[in-house]
Length: 338
Image 1 (cartoon, helix red, strand yellow):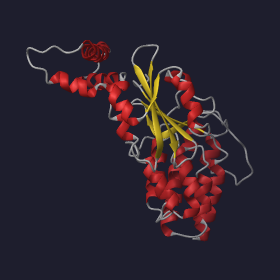
Image 2 (cartoon, one colour; image 1 turned 30 degrees about the vertical axis):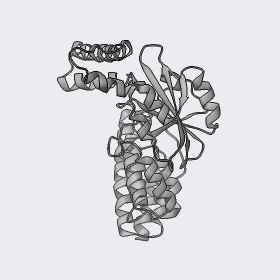
Image 3 (cartoon, one colour; image 1 turned 180 degrees about the vertical axis):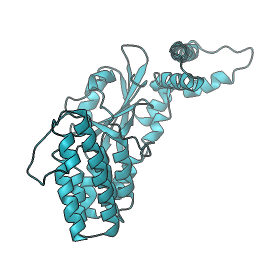
């Protein structure tokens, strides 16, 4: 076993000298001479052949790391923690898998916590799986936070870019950090974290929108009860002007999204998805948002601010004390960004 892990350690050192696929970077470090095929491909480190060789070697090393973790041994965990810092997401995914095989050690919780917010969904999913098998109370609390919203099952190895804070349409602190694990661009949910106190964040938001509102106040302002009553009106009854305005705004936005999808040649499923995203553009009408922040052990004292976006539609910024990460959480719900 020691011979195998020693060889694996050398391979990990080798991957550090090669560029991640598509990165175009080459960082020479002392280490063993590369295999002949890698050395030949990387005669010019910026060539596509070198990046392909780096990707192939990374997959080979990742498979060896996972296999070594199944066999066991005290020297596997340090290798996995080294792989967690690799530029190739295949190695980071293997690192999370190895650290969770057969069960994640409490000492690995900080590393897995970092991997759980990786830009690559496959890495996040592997880290969540590893944390789920840990007996560390910190890991179990983190798992609850990671699963607070839908997600964690996607296996894509493509990195998700963090959107610019300026695109949110709501004021965010300059030191806000994007949280990949709490976000879903398809669902129009964008999560951020800041060390600033909630009161400071809310003051900036309140200057641009309606709020801050408690969960009960937010539910009351959505008009859901009115919309339900509107659907129950008799033939001789007329809806109020506010009910009509809300219904017309929703219908116009959804129809516009469907027509745009049709013009682009989208399938019926894509048209339906476009309409669903457009409905999110009136996020201030969705009373169910209040229920998503109902766990006080995760979200402390949530407050809701409804902001009218410059391009039309609404965004709801939810500000809360993040009980797991510490500091202040900010989640923006709005129409999905293109």
